[in-house]
Image (tube, rainbow, N blue to C red):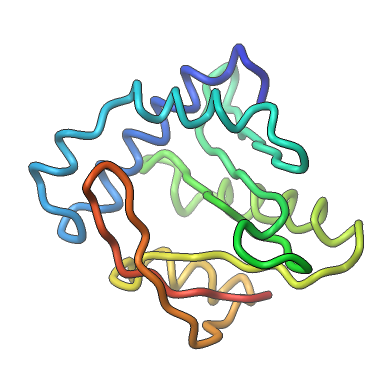
Length: 157
């Protein structure tokens, strides 16, 4: 992802969140999230050492994104921070291609284990990660952003 991609990437992230978190996050909280907050988040992260965001394209349209880098909480691990695919492109291999590219980049370095956090109630994402080969390791936490709290569980590859 380049600075020129931030707007489209943030719009995809926002739209995918609206779809993926229905029933997990209260409707009024989802409605309160804005594309601008995701733009600010991607802008802050763009220059962070070790943090990479890949985008998947269909023509010129961004249809998926994966962000990854060093584990944010525990040195010695790598982490997939986020992976989002446009709802209409899910089930077409975009997520798998993004995950393959992210894991390949992470595992070519020091070969550290790769972790990710996922909403405990997000059954479809958990199934995707499990089919990919990730396993829940028993760790749990609460993710908080913009007054939204989500119970999350950790997976490791």
